[in-house]
Image (tube, rainbow, N blue to C red):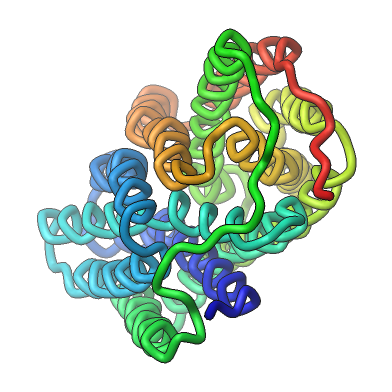
Length: 389
């Protein structure tokens, strides 16, 4: 027995928590910077291994979930993220904070290969389900920034780690009891998969294009998510940590709604067109981010994130379309190794650019160039409309 609605609820909550835990350090770091008197570029490097593990941990997580249980892997994810976040909050020096952040990255890596495959194999209208799920991803990033800013302001940075950690552990316990009570299936389930057959040359071409696009999109996403709080701190006068968190929360909260719109469009129109349009529109906005300040900066950051979010359901459907059902978890693991594996490179470049320029303008010029290159490649993607019935 499996309640598909409960599956979607816990997958969506898991999506929110994963992004929240992966994002709130970028706000909390502003408080640690002041309290520990350590420079931003030095503190941001503590996330390097964690960001790497978010990527490379995805493949083994997906592989295990294909052969064992996606629902139980989600229990492990909630439990591990909770304990790791508490370790971060109890840290009194860089070494323990580094260990906590690294463990947090490892447990965050479980979500995407497991949670996305969980949904893809539970719903016929995958675009709509992935779009709903995408809302929670945006909420998670935004909530991470907002909650972190609020908790730092009221209680200090330690509890900004500890309180969400305790809640995540509670969620792991609830999900575990739903599984053993058979409201959510322990065994992996699936609905009818894609029946199309594709030639080897077509599969190779799609793989090359998608893997390159996912790396580029992942790298620019990491640039945005990681640097945005510090970017606002630099370019908006008289702004507090709480206000920065609130603005980032608004941006990524709205991006979640755009993910739903993108998912609904993916059930009706050409996947290739949706994917391409979402990339092309990001090019000028990245250029604007390089130069804008104040309110105009917030607006172009919002537009960039909206177009990025709009293509995520399409990308996940494309992967399911070209992957056998029994390997969905492993394939999403590969995807997120490529996408989140760009994290250490992003952290290194952010640290380097900030160290050299005390700014991020060059970073977003590079983002525009990357987006141009992968947009050109996507023109050659041999994909037509995906039908859900």
